[in-house]
Length: 231
Image (tube, rainbow, N blue to C red; front, side, top):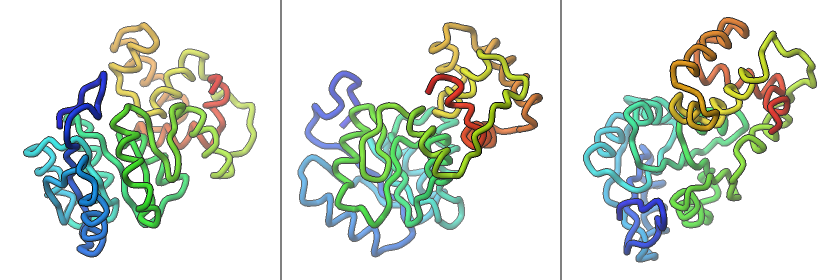
């Protein structure tokens, strides 16, 4: 099934690639999805490098991706696929799911984060991400900024009033970057050019002393910058 932006569940089957180094987990997921004719597992990968290669070859609608895998960790595989503008929608399927893992997965391009202990929610999670929303643990999430604000509390973010010299526009850029938006998406959302986005990011990194988008996202959450953006 190729994703149709207007009706992503209109085709007969949703193709799923399962990437997990644990054969028992793969067997459980296979058994779970095989009972539904709407889903078809088109491939399985035992390590991160194989997952990237199979996604590029098979173009699945959904990638179920474990974070802890040999050769190439799941989060690095996800980042590589995101940089290549891969169209598969990724659900991180992990044994450990905490606020920081959720932020890291979403910031790296995942559309869903699901604990392996919640395999009963797997079919709903897949339908959710195919419909264009996000799935986190046990629920559909349409407002990622609000979710990240919740996570800031869960991570024990202190209530601070410091702005770090950031302008209101720079805080808007940070909020969108934290949602996982690319420079192109940020430019579109704020009706500015990509060059302007790049200049904002250069200024932001200089002001807060960060060097990567993930560090910036975690910094924003810990310092309540998302709430200052109106999230």
